[in-house]
Length: 192
Image 1 (cartoon, rainbow, N blue to C red):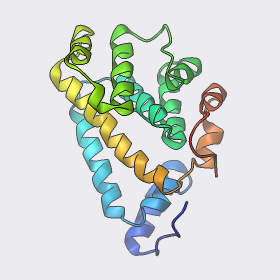
Image 2: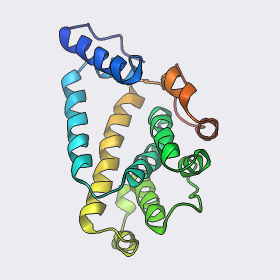
Image 3: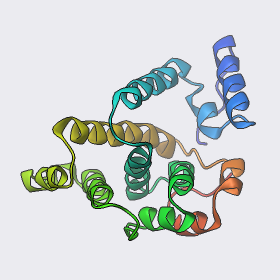
């Protein structure tokens, strides 16, 4: 990372302990966000509130995030969320999604969702009524369209902070990721 380590306060120590308990190690992004652990918790709270009330499936949520962060070029979140997507589909399918190639196993609804998210990340001003109509035709209602867009935007905010400040994927996260997925991540920062 480009910043020095944050001073270890009780709040920071608590974040490190939570990260180690959840992952078995203190994640690089936890070390970065230790500069403002309150903002990290607020981000996680917002995301949790969205995910607890959405009708998007777990697989659709993994597609949203995987498509968004791979389009952005964020290797860290792509490895994390691509691994989650692989557990819900297959290693090959997750690798294809992050390589911007929709596998045959994706439903029409999932393919429309991935296309929407990629276009939104590439150039949000290029979206059109026709794009939203395509999502509706694939079975999404307006609330789901809003929530998918919101989920992608939340992740982009988090990823942008991490990427801009040099936060690289954790070695432990990378080592646990499927081989096909790691081969597809040809962008972003290398493993630390």
